[in-house]
Length: 226
Image (tube, rainbow, N blue to C red; front, side):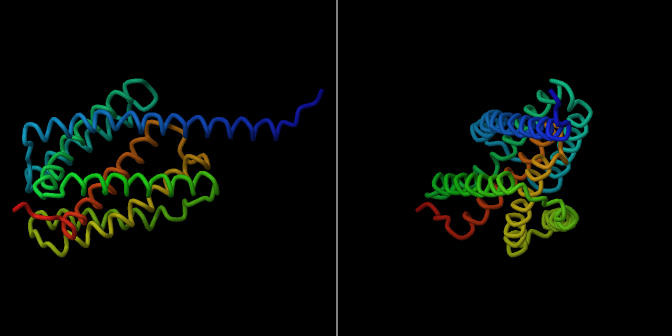
């Protein structure tokens, strides 16, 4: 019996990519548990750390976590560090959630932002998975956009211009939606073979998409309490 090695190799490669995708989605779902726990803890303790000092702490913890996850992504330690980091992100998320809950319809705004984020993610992830289109061409433009958004966000920590803040959120929704297409496409087409790294990327996309949506909803649909 003769085997078509090209067909066998293609099937093996496809199975490996599907495995990475399944593991990524499983770990991504799992990461929402420490995120929710961190958010609830932050709300209960009224956690707050704004301005430039908060920015320094956030960036320090985030870049430290990125480095540690990259170094341990081939082991179970990478999963543990990732989940710990998502717990920290949940704690940080509690600040905008507390702001939203000051509105009479705050819980509704949070729910709408969550549903909207899920809808955008599943739609774009499905497009990238079903079509198997290679969206790697978007990488350079997305990275340039990310740098510009980060610089604008850092600047607005000091200038606190409401219009700029809203603009950043609107651009961030488009930017991180693009990143979802890009990152899922990389998994589907073999550009990303480590599910821990893939989960971190998608988690940050979802996190930033949610906070940006919520920020806009608070600005335009928030009802102050009587």
